[in-house]
Length: 271
Ligand SMILES: [Zn+2]
Figure 1 (cartoon, helix red, strand yellow):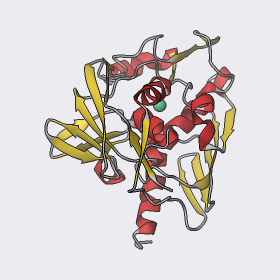
Figure 2 (cartoon, protein in one colour; figure 1 turned 30 degrees about the horizontal axis):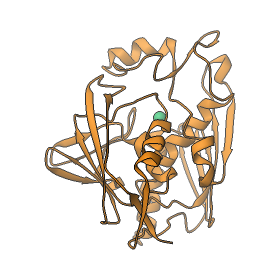
Figure 3 (tube, rainbow, N blue to C red; figure 1 turned 180 degrees about the horizontal axis):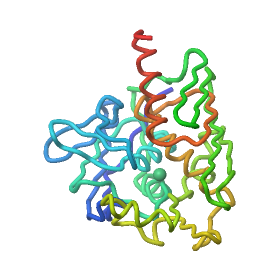
């Protein structure tokens, strides 16, 4: 299988969900065979080795330069099958746009795709693995395709149990990309006190209050689909060609990245 880049450069502008700050992202075609970010002259590879935080999103950094909340853009890249790009960021946080990865996918389609010779090696678990943490779980099995079943459960009547199974990357655009990030109104004050969600609004999240969704959901199980979107973005920091069979209960960026780290060590022969 060959690698894939864009045919032309594209550029977007918007504010970050956590910082509320405006940033411009310019995505260039490349032939490096890698996804690389660049900010203030520092090149940061899209790799688990450069993660600096996974608390409320996935942030990467190098030499004191940080780029925040890369997961939705990374997910779109993996979902579109892109394997080689240079992403220049002017600002600190990737724009949240509508809270999903669909605007990125649409821009990629507009820019066009081009095949390149260099191609990443497909990457997944070589043996069954279980990652657990405080009531959360990921089970990963070797599989020469890609399948994720995600179960979410939050202490909220509408979100007590939701799940989705996604098993063909060719359906990413229809099935996963439109699913927005979500929030629960009762959580908002606590997050704001922590200096987070400054850029969040009804325009970029699926919001729940105690009675149910405040704005119209795009899918009945949009929250579970969005968790798959996040997982694809995080696992994409190992390889833009992820493989494996994954069963996830109540996961999050931290658990996704713990799995990615364990898988990464396995391939380097350290486990
Ligand atoms: Zn997300």
